[in-house]
Image (cartoon, rainbow, N blue to C red; front, side):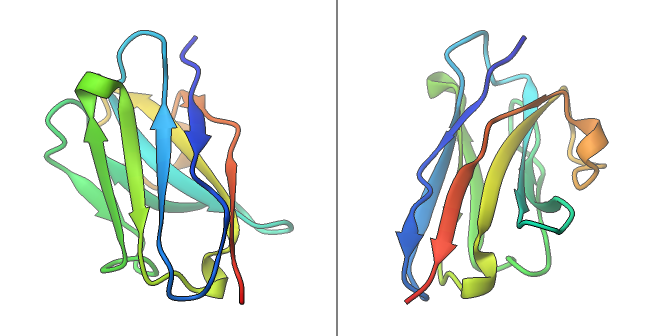
Amino acid sequence: QLRLVESGGELVQPGGSLRLTCATSQYTLEYYAIGWFRQVPGKEREAVSCISHTDATTTKYADSVKGRFTVSRDNAKNEAYLQMNSLKPEDTAVYYCAADLWGDGQKWNDPREYDYWGQGTQVTVSS
């Protein structure tokens, strides 16, 4: 059982930046595609971004975050990251990372593709 832990969420002003981290202390994250999703109360979970396994040759972004968010990974540290710049109030949500074994990112925005999920971290964008 792969246990994922997100961190880095906090209150930030519009236009600000945050970096979310998805980490595991078990096994290796290298063989998993990592997806980032977000959810607000009363709405469905929304796919935000994804990075494919191992060499990270594929990255995906929702249209709403393209040009503002960047996904990356450090396999040596067993971590993945979501750098979020130019944050807007509509980015406010609980952000989750998820892992898809040998995922290539082709069905990156389908939550059913992911085998493991973290507990989420709250991001609030407000002045």
